[in-house]
Image 1 (cartoon, rainbow, N blue to C red):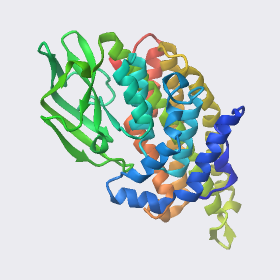
Image 2 (cartoon, rainbow, N blue to C red):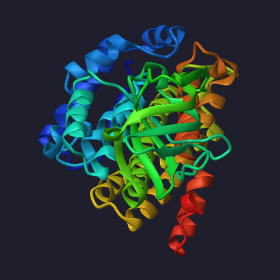
Image 3 (spheres, rainbow, N blue to C red):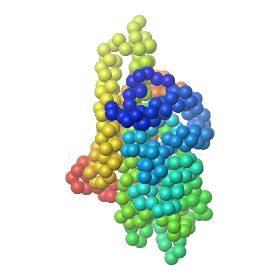
Image 4 (tube, helix red, strand yellow):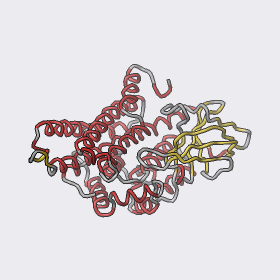
Amino acid sequence: MRDATLQRRPLALGLSEDERQLQDSIERFIDHEYDLTRRRAALAEGGDDPALWRQIAELGWLGACLPETDGGYAQSPKEALILLEQFGRGLVLAPVLDAMLVPSAIIRAAGQGEREAALLMAMMGGERRLALAWAEPGRRYDLRPVTTQARHDGYQWRLQGTKATVLGAPQADTLLVSAAADQGPVLMRVPADAPGLAMTSCPTIGGQPAADLFFADVRVADDALVASEESAAAALQAGWDWGAAGACAEALGAMRAALTLTLEYVDTREQFSQRLSRFQVIQHRLAAMALELEYSQALLPLLAAYLDRPGERSSTVIAGVRSRISAAARRVTADAVQLHGGIGVTDEAAVSHYFRRVVALDQAWGGHRFHLQRYRQQRHGHDLIHA
C-alpha cells in the first residue's frame, strides 16, 4: 500500500545496516506486491493466503523470529518487531505472530530437543505451521490449563477437553496444546489430524482464521511432550510476553498508517468551502493523534531490550508498555475512523481495517485494561495470569 513519509519512520533510531535493509525490503514488498485487494481476496477465502505464506518464507523473513543460535538470523528481538510493525502498516494478513513468533518462543523457552530444533527449522522454511491452543472457554487470558486434561497411561498421553478461538488452527498441521496433568501443566505437540480431535471454525473481527478445538480421548506418543510443570508454565509466560510485544509492534504500524490516511483525507476533503485540515478543532485532534503515535514509538525499543532478558521484571515492563500502546492504538485508529466520517466505517475504506486489526490484537493478546491491571498487580508482587 502506497503511503506518505510518516508511515516510513523506522522502529527506532539506531537501527543497524542489516536491520534497515530488512525494513526496506519489507516496505518494498508491501508497496509493490500487497494491497487491500489482495487482503480482501484472502478474507473471501477464509482469511488464509498460502501463496503469501510461501513468499514470506522464501524471502527469509520468518528467520527474523529466531536467533542465530536456533537457525535464524535475528541479532536481537528488534528484527521480529520490525517485521511485525511493517506488516501492521500494510495490513498483511499473514500469521507471523500467531503461527511463528509465539510458538517458536515457547519451544525455545521450554529447552528444545532434536525434534523441536528440527520443527523450528521447518517452521522457518514455511514447511510446517503451528497453532497455539492455550485459551479455554471462560478463561480468556488465564495461562493455566484447567478444563483440558492430560493423563499419562504408561506409554502415551491422552487428552480430553476444549480450547477456544485457536488462531490459525484450520491451516495448522501441528497444535501446541497446554493441558493440566497430575503433577502440573504440560505442553505437547498434537497433530492437527489426530483421531478424536474436532474443530469448529469461528469468526474473528480481524478476519484471521480460527477454530474451537474439542479433544475426545486424543492420544499422542510420549515424545510429543514439549515441557511439563514449572518449565511449561515458564514457556507459556515467555510466549505470552512475546505475543504482547508483537501485538505492540503491529498496532504501532496500524496506527501510523491510519494517521497517514487521515492526514491525506482531511487535506483533500472540503466543508464550508475550505479543507477540513484548516479547522482548528481538526488540527488539535490530529496533533493529539500524532503525540500518541510518537510516544508509542519511543516505547518499542524498551520491549526489544526486555525481551532479551526474560523474567518477572520483563513481564511487568512488557505489560506496562502493552497497556500504553493498546490504549494509544485504539484511540488513534478510532479517531481516524471518525475523522473520515461515514465512509470510515465501510469495508472499502482501509482505515476501517486498521481499526479492526487493533481490536483483534486486543482480543488475542489483551488490551489496555487487562495489561494495566496485570502491570499493577505484578508491581505489587502478584501475578494476575496465575491469580
